[in-house]
Length: 109
Image 1 (cartoon, helix red, strand yellow):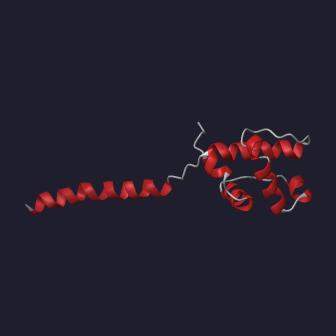
Image 2: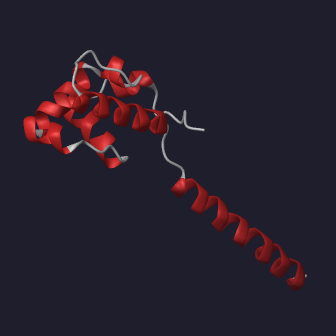
């Protein structure tokens, strides 16, 4: 009888540890609506925490709060990888936002 308990524990414990590790490594998936409803700074910080790279030229022209406001204001277009502004720094920003948006919404391949 003790042998059955030992075998059960030997099988169950590694499976339990595997499930726990998997649940910690899995990132939360957001919907467009959840992201869109966030305040500008919270949205910006979430994108930064998930790998958004803001190009140096944009950083030279705008503060972090202004970039957060830009992200919120243009979120509809930026999440699709486009922007209505005509400068390479904005195009780079749109590409980066789109990349992170796909990651946050689990749309990456």
